Image 1 (cartoon, rainbow, N blue to C red):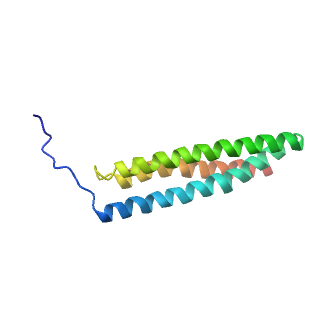
Image 2: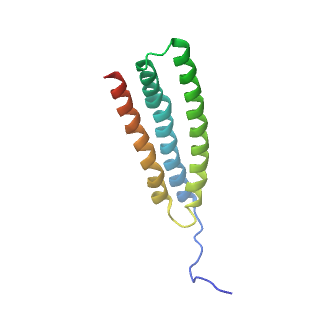
Image 3: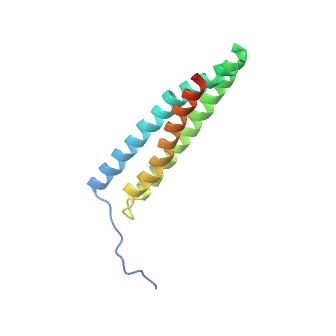
Amino acid sequence: MLTSGKRKYKPGFKDYVVCYALFSALLLLSVFTVFSIWRQALLAALLATGWEAYSVRTVYTLSMVVLGVLLFIAVFAAEIYLRGGMACQQVRRRFLRLLVPILVAFVGGVLLRQLALA
């Protein structure tokens, strides 16, 4: 039997607290990004198109539903990804891997809103 010689790390209570604290931070930032920043950015961009009110409302509603579903899937996957990182002691590294795209989406939403309002 081949073994790597490493003992398997068993996460303790502190590891779970850190993992779920980081997960909560990701959750709050991603919900704020989608339902505050991107909601305003989409609305500003759609209003700038000059479409009729019915078309703007329809596209806006569908966009928010799609963003909400994607956020739900991403948050669900992020929790599993972070929790899986506890066994190999990579929670902070995995947190940063998840944080970067959220920050990019945040900045992208702010820029889109500013461009649409200009």
